[in-house]
Image (tube, rainbow, N blue to C red):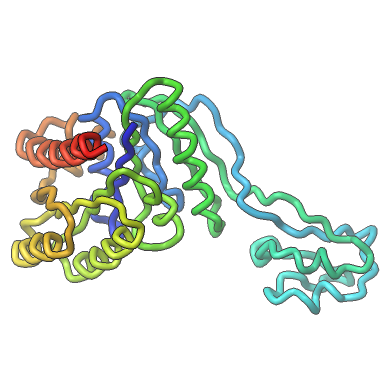
Amino acid sequence: MKEIVVISGKGGTGKTSLTAAFAALARDAVLADCDVDAADLHLLLEPDIRQTQAFSGGKLARIDPARCTRCGECHEVCRFEAICLNEGAYAVEPMACEGCGICVHFCPAGAIEFRDAINGQWSISDTRLGPMVHARLKPGEENSGKLVTLLRREARQIAEDQGREMIIVDGSPGVGCPVIASVTGADLVLIVTEPTLSGRHDLDRVAKLVAHFDIPAAVCVNKWDINPEIAHAVEGEASAAGLTWAGKISYNPAVTAAQLQRRTIIEHGDDVLRQEVTSIWNTVSELLKAQVGDT
């Protein structure tokens, strides 16, 4: 079983569109949308949800007013100012509570409960391109790294149960915790960038992150023809950094047309776009096959 993760140093590079296209080309993969802060792979694949479960990534404090003596100890020790006196009673502001538990430890009356926080939900769905695991965090919620780890674990379990040989992960943009949780232990990472100064800068950051975890990586440039000079520079820098050059995709209105039809860019039918994406997929597939040969 092989797992490829598609990531980008910044948002808006076309990462999700390329992930969906890979799903159409792979035909027998399990999909995982690990961009849990802004999941949108479902917009293209129209999943039929089979099961949904709540996700708890932490704890929240709650004060029982019947047991609270209003001594104010919890208010004094809370470094996040999440406990306030309101109309003569202390209460916890859920959006401010970090779930550290210090108030529970110091409350002399034992009036504070520590409950699981429901940060969002995750689902297992069927799509026309294969099973998909996806999730959605509530606005402002944290612990997205834990949720990403859960999704990847569930995707692997589905692949094992159904005898599927590949997992395709739509990772998060940037270099933060959810990205680290997305790529750790993957067989291959494909970094999607764009020919802009910000895209070039963020590519360097995410490439260093992947190198830190010693994960094989390839690079492709989307919309390369909006700035061929930078696109050419990215190709040279990628090779110099030890990254495999996977190819480039031209700017094409067919991408937007496919999105409006809720189809992948492979299903939409533009020949030029299909050839460019298929070439990148073939490079990725060869890299994965070479890993099998090495082992």
